[in-house]
Length: 164
Image (cartoon, rainbow, N blue to C red):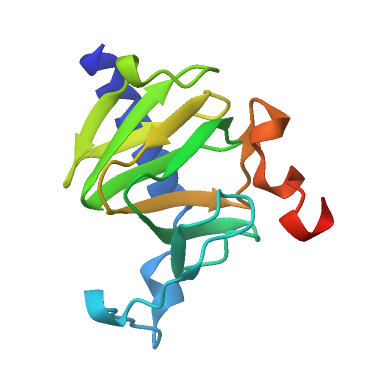
């Protein structure tokens, strides 16, 4: 199983690197963000409330590669969902518990500690639990989207308390 994950990861990284802009496209655009300077704001409305996000490179809404950091608080969860394009995730700090399949099952998750790397092929249902504050980095090709297995889990379908 781990060998299959490694093969999938290598293929995904190769695909992302081949789609990355050439060095000439970056002339005069050198950028450095130190950890304390990363501009976290509320995560997109497609994710459950409570997380923060920072776009480090590119634009997730447009064609092309982008890099986004997500800061998930302790107790945060992302219900089962899929993405139409590969998603490469690196755990920067904390710990993510990643599960596969259309139903969230804490008993079948794999723990990804800080420094871990994961790639999720397009269309594979997965979910995540965060027992401690965790920062993860998502590298992917835009436009990025998230499709929840159960539409009731989609925060965009939630009715605000004042509207009930």
